Amino acid sequence: MKKIAIGSDHAGYELKEHIKNVLMDMDYEVLDVGTDSEAPTDYPYFGFEVAKVVADKKVDAGVLFCGTGIGMSVVANKVKGIRAALVTDLFTAIQSRRHNDANILVLGGRVLGKGLAEEIVKTWLTTPFDGGRHEKRLEKILEWEKEHFK
Ligand code: RB5
Image (cartoon, rainbow, N blue to C red; front, side, top):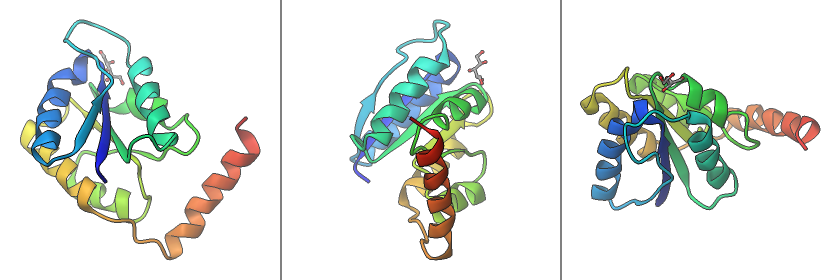
């Protein structure tokens, strides 16, 4: 994973800025779709922007931030091909990559401290998908999407 798209609303802005610096320190190329301040805004725009570039494979993965992470998860998981994981602990960060091959990580700016968020991001980005028995489960999701999405 080399290129990461990030996005937040106002409630996730501070954590997004922190994680952006962490990612750049790790030599990731970062595409930041906004928001650019703590002025109140609406999370769907930024969530869909990140989900689109991840689904279109213009980046390798995405990280989204809002207050709880719930709104961004709902938005991102509406997009075909997206497997967004709302993560608050390291075990889930690992499992969301190993078992679910999550392609977007979602974090709650009002839930997580910066230190834990940083560890979650580093762990998530460096944990590979296990494949094997999990492949057929992901294929079932893809089949459903093919049948029901335009
Ligand atoms: C914004 O107040 C807040 O509702 C939003 O950031 C998010 O937590 C929604 O799920």
